[in-house]
Length: 105
Image 1 (cartoon, rainbow, N blue to C red):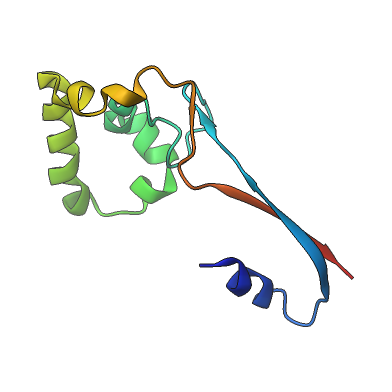
Image 2: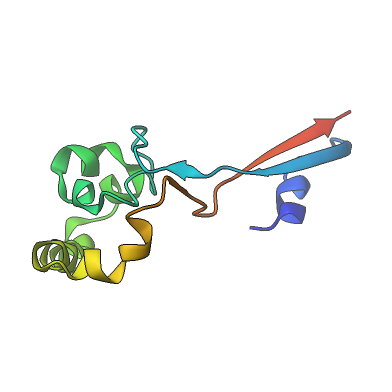
């Protein structure tokens, strides 16, 4: 969804202005939303994390199984760390989250 579509959702409200701010995700984020574990992918394999994260909790297990098994294998073999070595020294990452603040009159 682009910003114009978001503004359209406001309906009859008059948007006098808006700001868009990038929200980088820290490597040690504890909130548990979709990209919170970008540097700690093993967390996505934990049942506690899966049940607390709507994108995983609401997806049927049979649709997650293969991807989670590939992730488990890549972490175990070191392939994930090798492929994503550029992430391991980063303190935060722009994964696309944006904060949009609109001045509505």
